Length: 105
Image: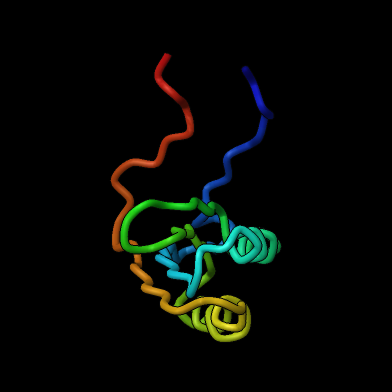
């Protein structure tokens, strides 16, 4: 049942102050397009989580950076340069009410 054991760091103490959720829409849903996007986005250290979604957007990414300038750099030089992206909508976290890693059993 245990996938791995990790230490959970306080992101503020390691200067990861900005959390963004990016909704990504691709221009097609071919298996090769989806796979290519996934293979590329997992290489970005700023992307902490990536989920393929139902609904309006194809993927949601949880991105963590030091500040808005670092996010802008990530967006312009990494995310926006990926092929097959039609739209990215980014939502910035104002406050963190709950962040848990344990599943209720």
